[in-house]
Image 1 (tube, one colour):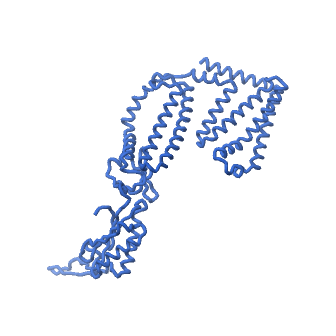
Image 2 (cartoon, rainbow, N blue to C red):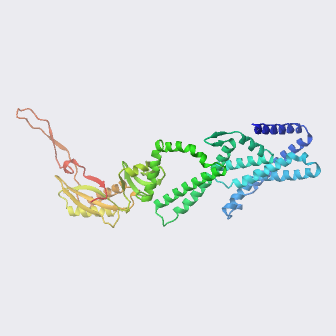
Length: 460
């Protein structure tokens, strides 16, 4: 508490000194000179922005120099202010005692620190990290320039509570928070850079690329936390107090998260499912997108992405259409009348399939006579594609439309339903029975199935 009282006393003395100096002419003169320098800097920066075309001027420069030129132009008003105040301070030092130009010296030092910090921190692309670094660094610089850094740190370190053998003070919390944010930002930036390099390596499979990228990110984040905690002087043995609570949390509340994390690592390691694969799990069919630590995204091509927990991909039955090969065999069913030549129908069906761009020539399509129905002949047309991620239903639709046109061109008839006539019968007692419907022409396929059917699969 003595340190806090000392800091409060120092600030009070400074405020009283400033209050007394406000009535003096030399302080008012310094205020006027500072305002004049600020006005001149603002006008100079506004004029430079109107006259200079920074994009055309820096055309062809390296990206780093272009960014630095942009920062110089953005802080031009402060730079001009620093130069003018520095000149004024030097002139007043040569004419009067140093104490008579103290305010000009403080303003010049604070503005110089702000420009230096803005130029360095401006290279950080993350807006939140940029503001954090800029404000923290300038606050430290301002306290140091005003001579309040040491008393402030002492006062913040004088108040604290002991938790599990660890003394927690406001100074420790501030230092730990700032260092953690900076180190975690650096770890994420480094992991993103390394992840891009790994993904550009053609020798690695997509699943191994994702696995290496996630392991690198996990290791860098762990090292960042350890470095931040050790830098502020935290003894890791003092954190043993929290290990029991963390263990209980992992055992009860986080068991699903841990299960999904381990399942994701297993999926990436055994390469059973990898980014780009076409899978069907449960009612979902689509292309595997991002494989995260907790879930795997499956794009169903209808504007929705299903986030399937990694544990479900381990415990449930999953059909991977592109596990060992991109080739997928599909089939559609169709019927013809008995007055049509079945061999001509087969040839027409193969011709129709080959007319579709996505249907492969090798393996060649095949049309099989499936069954002699009660009123029609049933066929199955098999064909292969190698891009199931582009859709399955759409290519079946294209094949059926081509089949309709080709069968008509070759004179192969498709069964069509006709109107039914009603037949009345009399029961033995002379009463009429319920009417019985009998079609004038045979139905499309025995048992009432439609003239066309479709299916898909890789068996048979």
